[in-house]
Image 1 (cartoon, rainbow, N blue to C red):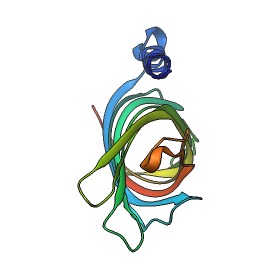
Image 2: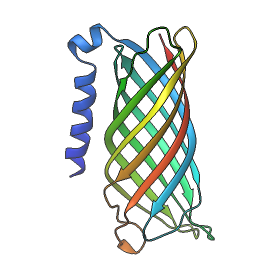
Image 3: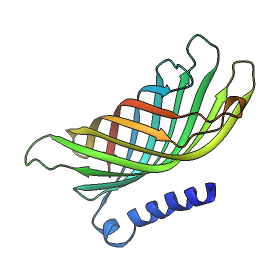
Image 4: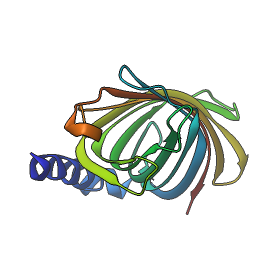
Length: 183
């Protein structure tokens, strides 16, 4: 299953950077960080943080990128926490408004999340699963080729097997700020 997921993500990235898309696109890098509000039916988590870095291509209305991210949330009233590392292929649709410094967008991504459940006593249980996200936001042009992004993302993953070998249903509401630099 994991090989299939990795293959799908790699295929999406290769499609995004192939042929005509790559010829008409401007490359960029971005960094993002913000508040991560993890929710689970089985456990209560404190708000945590999410960080990500990406490289992509911007063709005007469409953007495609490969992203690596990290998120951490503590278990409420405990020394335990859960963290995840994500590898995502993301697509964006930018709405064009002539002469406006603000560019709204919608986003979606597919990939893999590796969950690490730290029980607070030194033991860690890990599992890698399929992950996806959807979101919306706006980019604010702050200088030529420099954009400040503000966005909301709903992130979800297949049920990882964590503490006690139980399945956990996990979703996360993330509010993020990022800086995107074209070159």
